[in-house]
Image 1: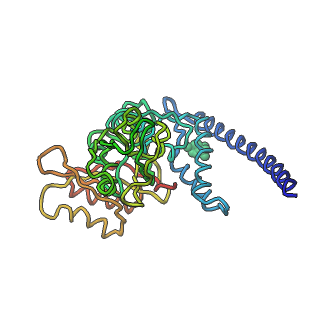
Image 2: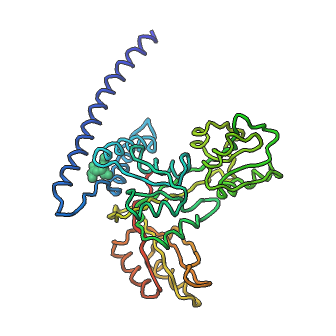
Image 3: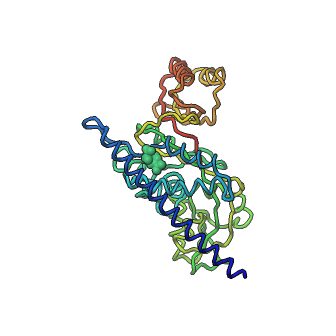
Length: 364
Ligand SMILES: C=C(O[C@@H]1C=C(C(=O)O)C=C[C@H]1O)C(=O)O
């Protein structure tokens, strides 16, 4: 009886799959048409813009709003994320540079945001991601900007001071770290643990409790740490799932981050401004003159207009000793009339103000 039932269900699934296949192909043909229409309506010398982050955010939100289960909203949106990624690749395969090597959380963030149908290029340092985008060698770059346990990624903030870049998206990733060993590791003779400095810091309490006397060696990335461990009998690495799988390492201990909600926020950087979606964030850099009350003056217009600040970070300005710049994120788009007025007010008081970009709030 149950054999019969199973058979019938499989016939039904096969027929549904055929329909899904047809529908996805229809959708892909629409994307090809979009490319044709966009290309046909160009003025001379103008380049077509195929990737539209504001439209993608709207598509994903619509999917989540209409989803009635049994699949969860995030799961359903993830599937549509991949369909869109493949459709866009028919128009134009996006090239994306990320902080590498392969297997980093930044690569996972890039895939979460753009889907898998992109050409992704690992870079050795954050600054190189910025330079690759500035040189036009890739369409977008992905860099980490802040971690919920360890705070700002200062290399990224400093790179914004040196390059003219537009932020066109954000994505958040839950970060789970594992203690990883290779086949030849003698697990009771570990004398060295490799990881990125940020990850060592995110697991500090766990390391103090379990490996108090073991040397902690900071390397350029978690993936690099995983790579090193492969042939060493006395070392371990702290890294995530992607690196563990890529380098075939064993998890000696799982989820060793000190805070269970440990998350990192990543930014997509490019050269394309993103129009408003109605649910956006804006990032700016402001430098104020070094006088009492400067920060207060800067914050008052936000407060008076009820604008929600989501982050404020201070960095040395690099143009004078003990002078600072403020990195500020807030809710809204720089083209909204209210935000426009606030930015005008601030620029009257500021030494310099630069809008780094307005972009849709992370959907996934
Ligand atoms: C189809 C378009 O181009 C791209 C593909 C999209 C999709 O597959 O839904 C959405 C936005 C763009 O990145 C479009 O502009 O609508």
